[in-house]
Image: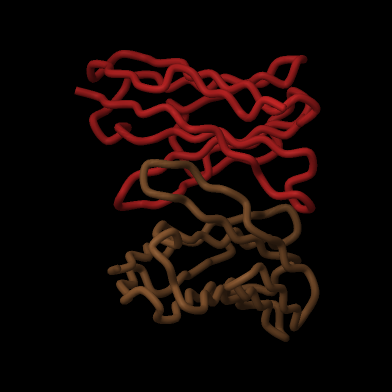
Length: 109
Length: 113
């Protein structure tokens, strides 16, 4: 079955540094979604990527879908303390969907 | 509009008991899915319902079951609770998950003692 690996598991950065989390699938994906979960909260939908090589931006967040549609990344430029939380990818292989284990981001002010 | 509502928010049960959790999706959403979240295992998919039919099921034992009603509200039941069932149980609803993503509820924190 589909395997989804998300790395790193944890990332601690100084405020102002950049951050990237990667989501890698063993199979070709139809689409991928990203979610953010604040400490004590629930996952919140951020964005969806569908096309090969697609890049989308939301302010300081940049989302990319690989050319082979097997991997994706989320990059945050100049992190702020409000970026703290766990970032999950949700990888779709047609009707089969798997969440990555998440990357927990902590930001030191 | 109202979000996804899960009740109760917190629950403490004894090993061997059974529990029922409730989820009311966003109005108009017919897809409801359930997840178990633990610090060690992350988000684990339990099952998904669409129009009262179970569409997908994760790798959980038969003690975990669910159903969806005609008004799209959903319940999940866990029988013969074990200590390892202690977790945050999240419900998510969607109009079309592959297009719009999921909207999650705040979850039910279940503690089994």
